[in-house]
Image (cartoon, rainbow, N blue to C red; front, side, top):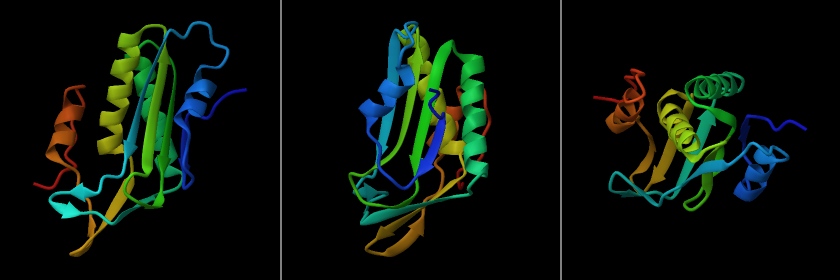
Length: 160
């Protein structure tokens, strides 16, 4: 059974279950690298009560699929899985997961980091934080664009 490469969902996920499914029965897998992002209780000096994530169904999945295709071209990986949650989330909630499998650790680490850098700047998600000062949309950061640039990809998503 093939595991979907991309899931956009409101429900939480279990990292161990997702990794087990990604590497199931593949004796070539010698390395697994994963990253799980969580909601922080502070951002830019303000307390965060909650975060709401929105996306454009269909377009988001297509964009992330293209990112995974690019990771396969750049790195010797056997598989990758991205889960991103949408809807209302609270501090400590898991937001997203990237997992990559390969024969050797270096390729998994690099592909996982590449996918994270790509997701932070290129995936069509919109984040709104609830703070004591009111709701605010989260802008892209210059550091996220810089992280993507080291892979040879130019981005200009941050507000200057």
